[in-house]
Length: 517
Image (cartoon, rainbow, N blue to C red; front, side, top):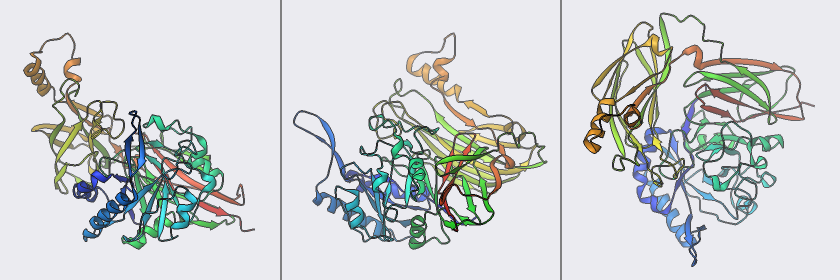
């Protein structure tokens, strides 16, 4: 595989957040390969009758905030690459776009029309990426009729808003229900059916911090890690998006990578190589916006006999805990976690949803971390990125890839209590544990409550951890090829969608293949 670099390319920085950028930067650097803070030049205004609506800050405030952001980005001279951008909404008729510059010298352009914005930006040195395009075109959803392929080479298919893949895709676009519902003419598949050349990314559209796992990440395929190479890869659509975990995807036609424009040969080879974070369910091959072929991996590996030494992945998820409506003061918990194996820890992936957690030891046979999980309460917008109207759990997860003898056990220590977990058992089932002694003490101390005919009061308020069912290598690694001869139009586009059994998704950028005649 070529080098894959990860980013959350959509972290909204409100004016009030600029002073918080140092802590955001630290978290971004811990989670990402490069980052782009995106200035959000809008605020909630109230008229004399008390009606609340969003308006644009004054040009003077834009300029002042933009220069503060530029100063911050230029002041970070270490090896973590920063781009800077801003959100452009215009009059809402052409959809929301984030504007980025290759260097840190660009200025904000805030015309009302997308065409005017494109006219003011310099191709190859600046881009404007549409996001949540699946809302109604003309009402902050994407207007593909005015799309400029040079200025907007990629589109954000997934974010904290949900999925804009299609009006009937399996992930909804309903987090911000007031902006919906989803409408077909703004979606990515609608654009591809129209023959528009646009690559695919995912990113958070986060307003509380960068790199929230579950809100989307962008993968950039680049030969080198430098400002120009990464930006050029985005310009050339050498990108893909994931909804949550970092699925590794190498997709080619006739050995040309995603985002490429190629000429058809007599026999055309689609070559897909995937290393997932968990068991892969299926791979969909979508041509000209319509599913053409599905490779179903589910059922192809489960009955294979495992070798004595097995390579596998599993997710450790921590969180849950006391209901904040009952215990409003219990906002977070610090977990002390360790894992030891007689084999080898090959890789870990952090699925943090908020800052503060720290890995203390990451060795071949030993892992230790301090992990903070949080839980919001109704109306607490600071912690609740997904939906601030409901109690929102911010669990934290780590994915481990381990190689060990199948008859060995993994030794966990969670908050001082040891758990000896059979690898063979973990390959066959998930394992859920609750800190029941602690929650019994909590309810006794707070409410003198210690007897009831069922366990609900304790179970519903207990901190828990879940060892998700482990997947052997054959479950999360797929190499698939297929061949086709004929095109369906003068120029077809073909992209790949990878779906894991746990629901995590990767969307590739398309490859465009044109007739030689």
